[in-house]
Image 1 (tube, rainbow, N blue to C red):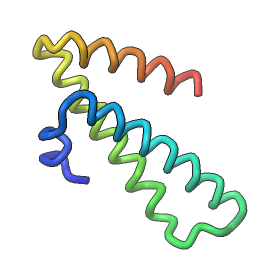
Image 2 (image 1 turned 120 degrees about the horizontal axis):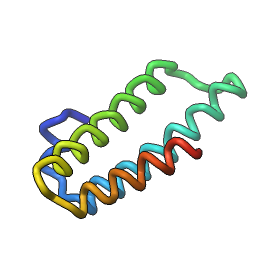
Image 3 (image 1 turned 30 degrees about the vertical axis):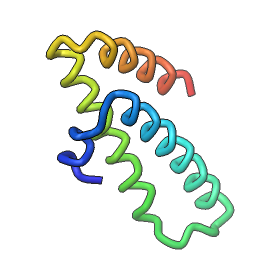
Image 4 (image 1 turned 120 degrees about the vertical axis):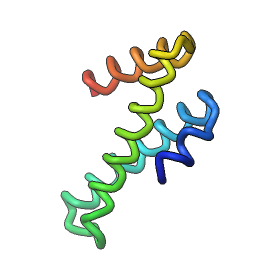
Length: 82
């Protein structure tokens, strides 16, 4: 996913996409452990997409979108715990 596409998404859509990507990353890691992962580059791509979403959420939080800022803080806290 390109950064331009991510910036066009609404906050709710970003949250849903972030959750989807986190589940996908978990699945990819599970496949990597069981040696069934066909394309190891998918791990890197998924991590970068997650980072792009965090970047957009952080940008929106800095510009005054309090809802995005609150979600961003919660997402970071969840990410650090999980």
